[in-house]
Image (cartoon, rainbow, N blue to C red; front, side):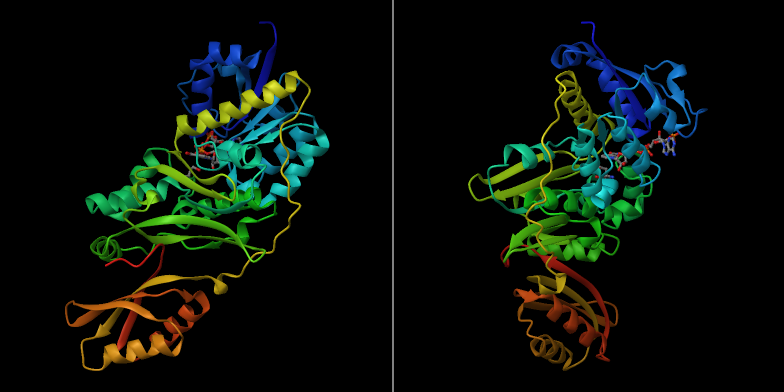
Length: 430
Ligand code: NAP
Ligand code: HSE
């Protein structure tokens, strides 16, 4: 096999190391499958003094990523640095030079997808980003290619490994939030700034990418309604458990009445919902399509080797295309659907209140819900020290009405605090 495709790696942290490991470990099969040897010739990192236990010659490392992109001995660029700049400029330059790019950068694709797709199309080369959504799980290709003949109506998934890991351990072990977050960072699941994970930004970026592909529309990361898991407490998890639910950070993209709704938030999921049993750093994505019906994609959503697997798969794809002077499937945004405002969403809610333990409070609270057209399905009181905890589950209600209810509750003297408001998927239990 004479042909060699030379790879320039931008970044060699968690994911970059996974890529190098797989390329080395599976080299013979990868060469046979690709029809060319894949060789890492240049690697950009920030810190050249850091010890990296990888099968790479020290001479390949540089701290100047632009030289990797420009180098004559780089045919394909893999971007696993993260962040918007310099990653965006480097990717655009590589495409302009006619070099295909593989990236795991969901933040960038969610923000600049349409411009980057256009740059790749203009250059006639591939821009692939399977690893950007749900780590090892093949989901970009199924949406872009396998389901290209179908009409997708809804995509719902657990899209962030770090938060799923945290919520799983809080639920199963009663572990403290801060301890499990530190473990998720040590395991390489978390983003460089873990607030991207726990604040739901990472899942929102992934949800925007999935919605864009599912509904042929340019959905930007900022279009996604987002709430993170920072305010989910052990009390919420306990209530959910007693009622037959688990709390998961869920991304939901759906199309109805010619508009696209995209949202990420912690959600009460019935324990028998298929996504409820997705634990640890695993991700899962449900796709509902007119012709295909329901499809479920499940696997590791984060970590060096799972994410590296998706990247190497993309690299083999773009290398095969390079050898045939071809390029892969293009993103289509021809339907250009508008985004439905979150206030128009209709769902069920769990509301937790700390109230004075005195006569008439429950009646006043119930009246407030009623005045705002939010119907209560279940309500009960749990006594705590000196006050009372009211737990309410509503019937389906409009988000705007629920928000108005919460504002009004906050103005009632005997309501000390609206402690939690979470959305509930599925039928009411109990
Ligand atoms: P990481 O461990 O922080 O690695 C980032 C790498 O990029 C490091 O090698 C760093 O150099 C290098 N780097 C950053 N800025 C640079 C600059 N200006 N110049 C040269 N090198 C630079 O991050 P990661 O977890 O591998 O994530 C990388 C990307 O993959 C992100 O877009 C992330 O969202 C995405 N992703 C991550 C996962 C995951 O499980 N971690 C999964 C899917 C997608 P040093 O090594 O010298 O610091
Ligand atoms: N930080 C991300 C997660 C990595 O926890 O899912 C995978 O995109």
